[in-house]
Length: 126
Image (tube, helix red, strand yellow):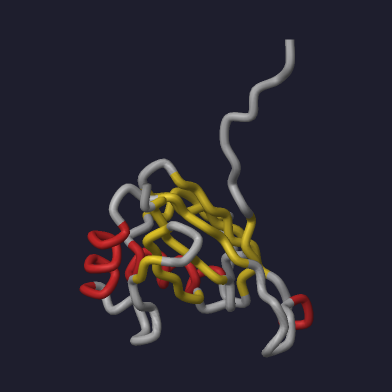
């Protein structure tokens, strides 16, 4: 019998883990589940609605230079309009994070976290 994949927890690089945890909590409604207890914190886990992300400290030299492609993550959500309104209320979105229907058949919006990771929240239109 083949093994069954149950979940994925991406590990995102962070220049300042504590500040990044704060950003996700304040702007996107995540909860901090754990951190390594270090001073400074170098590893933490955050979650929301069954989605879990891990944040790991990385030196600046490991981040792509401005203008290069940064990692991007897509989150399937049940109601992108409600999430957009919630995030706007938390002041987590820039004015360029518009909610839109795409030519590829999704309703979505996106933003960048403090470390330049692209975050896209979407729902299929059909």
